Length: 131
Image 1 (cartoon, rainbow, N blue to C red):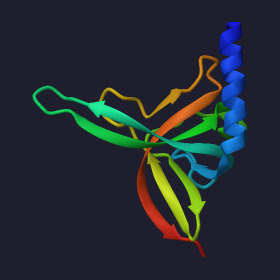
Image 2 (cartoon, rainbow, N blue to C red):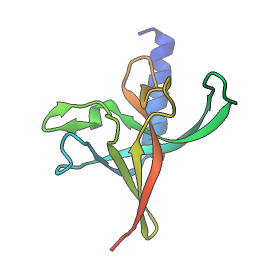
Image 3 (cartoon, helix red, strand yellow):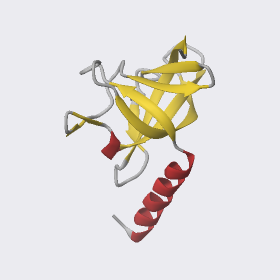
Image 4 (tube, one colour):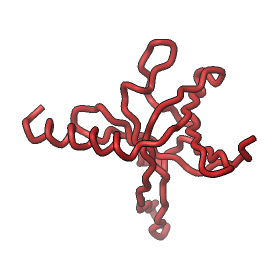
């Protein structure tokens, strides 16, 4: 990694630490053992065009999560389609499903060249009242 890439990675990690909120990550591989972690919520606009159709703009709710925090049974895991990320906002539990934004767009990518942060693309899935 170059010096510039190192500086950018450190800046990204510092920014995530300052803006992080409590999340619960549930893997489809082991839904009985959700992972409590910190992450930052954002959004990203995707332009999707399939042959013969107009351009569609889709907004993804993204979560930035440290790769090192996504551990299940002592093993680092990667996000999988249909995993869920939940966060509490006020009296609601907001649940997002890990999904791609189109055929050509993956459901996660790395946010830095050192691959220390996942940018996970999700869609709002459901809300539950917090008891």
